[in-house]
Image (cartoon, rainbow, N blue to C red):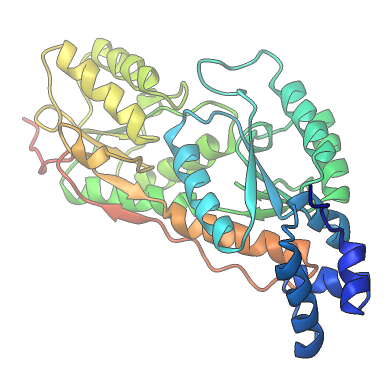
Length: 352
């Protein structure tokens, strides 16, 4: 059996140093063409295939990123992880996905502990960088022990969070423009003649919910009368939209329109309306703050906000790799959500 050649043996046979072989294996531009040719000749002759582990031992990089999500069944996270994977692949990086199950139906009782435990596991995996999407860091007031563990992780490996900034966290953040998405949605409903507008979905005490409700109240107050009884918070899933819509129907007179925190919540509202002999947009207009895949195939097609996950994914990976390579970070390109007008808002209705 032919003996597998080592990197040290390649260096000896090529007449170069081990560090030069390392630079050739990692496509470093500092190697002269002559030395590169010598090393490549030995590699080809011996059929040497460097493992990712071997490369990591030489370069102190594993070309692997950890991605932490709170619920992979949430279409927002699924879509965003897909874009992150594409962007990472283009840079020859692979992903390790950690689904903490701290949201949704499988939500654990102590979500903070589950995420802290995940951070410890990530550190043991020797990844080059970490991307965090949702979870405890999205809360208005994250658990102090969680923040302490996160800071410890960030001191050992670069951490980037796609979410709203926390004043007491030193990690790098990429934020979505939540207020602009709300303004686009509500202004569209107002332009159609709707004035009595409610808001459904979103977990209380979570930044994405808090900031969107604040923006909703702000824009409604500019053009109409804000009615707090039309705010129904619960969670981010289809059943939450169903229960919120059911509660509004049971209150009595329907509002002119509703803004759902995402397309899944809007879909639940559609089902509740149908179960009560009502329909969207005939009886009430509904728009969404966050576009999910296939929302243009629902009945009715959902008027929603494209959050441009492709942009977010590419920007996150690009910025994290700069952090890993200790390169200067340029100013972030502004995130700009986009209104997609479809069927669920109908046309303005005149109340008698």
